[in-house]
Length: 392
Image (cartoon, rainbow, N blue to C red):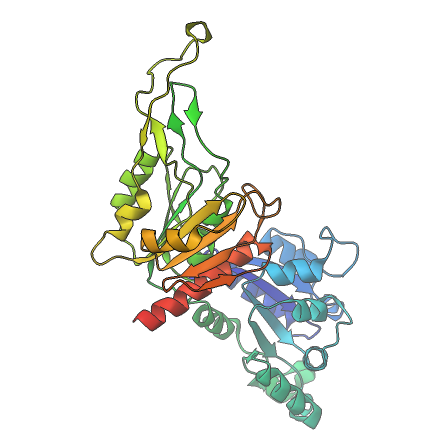
């Protein structure tokens, strides 16, 4: 259910912290990648090494002296969802007031991921007017509150304030991360094709496949059934069906056998190939070869001709300007066209950032500012999901 999802587990200083070790194990068994942040107070109840042994990762315990340069922002951006269990009265107060006095509260302010809070405290603290006000603020901010429940508390007391059981928290996490693309078949193409000149040489381009791989990963994270047809050697999300190809013809053949509800054609497919590639290696002594070129299969056009067609996203890598993209979008018959100027140093091939212009089916355009390719992928799938909803 949670395969490949990135969950940040925050543990604050309450005796229920011992339950968070079991919650951590449940999240991992469900397939999630888990990073753990321990507040200073939490370390009085459970040690960082315990969580490190469960996750196989170093635990973050401070804003300083860590492997990460900026642990709160790095982890905040990494996470698909943040769970704080237990969430003490002090932690709720800091979050409601926007205070970032230690590492856990700083992470909570630095993330845009959904946040699940599992409060745990004595009954008197839970029922205090200040706590009730903080909860109203946190619910208004969109945070999800799980529990508490009635039961045994610290010091032999009994009443409301016991942290929800890890199984219940896991159920809430799984429901939240079921994904807006659950059950949607998504086809993604990525990378630049290579068209053989001879047995060792080829015509190709500089596409790294990073943008397409980011889209495939994001779609998988949202619950989609993803098939990625790629020329790149980049790693893929663990739940993605990976098909590696080299040439435009191989890509066209692979794509032809894949049914899809959404097709994101991010690959840089060569328009032409040598008409008569040599089976052996061309020799320098024979002089420059006469390279007669012929068109390659138009992979995107073949997908567009399907009946019914999938929701189709095309990519256009332009050089020096985007004057032609409106005409390209209309000619290709795409629902969305993602265009960028690959001569820009921060938005071209092989870099981790991109600056794109979106062309809609009616010809309207929307410019997106410079962002990571991961963030572009997230915004693009937000847009695709909204467009598909309106189509239905």
